[in-house]
Length: 75
Image (tube, rainbow, N blue to C red):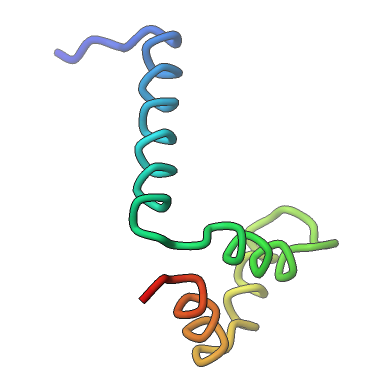
């Protein structure tokens, strides 16, 4: 039988995960701000929900996403 983790432990582990992810982007030279700005443009003014998510995924253009991701990388 598995024990449940205390909410404080879950919160602490989430913070550790966020810090590791943030540092990984920084160390790899990826401009996370550029990606965040692109995503913000996609979701700006839209309601939260699964139908909106499918609408956003349907509107993505493969070459455009590829260009944004490549321009955000340092290579």
